[in-house]
Picture 1 (tube, rainbow, N blue to C red):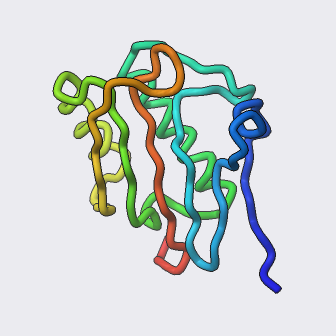
Picture 2 (spheres, rainbow, N blue to C red):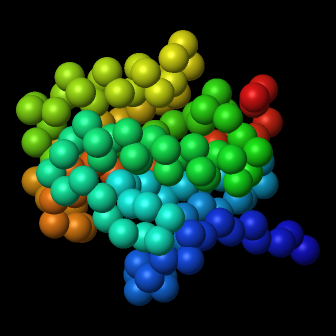
Length: 133
């Protein structure tokens, strides 16, 4: 029997919406959309794209750290960006800074709205733990 390895921040949204931040399936880890919140689950930096992107990447690192994984093991990501045309350059620059020479598969979706008022970025991703760290 396979056990389920689930990672949660234990913030209200997880129980309110019925999800976990990440779940391991064999060697793959599927990570829910990360956004700009602190350790207590408080949303930060409403309408500030650069600050939200930086905090979102920090939260991605928290998930990676939990599983003992690295950015080089991220195989795909989906970015949801409010006002994509306005934020395209910052999105690209942030992505290049975060990943360096690593190039995961990536989809960027321009959207009109996200869950929280003032939320302008959310990133979900998949980690393959078989890849070299």
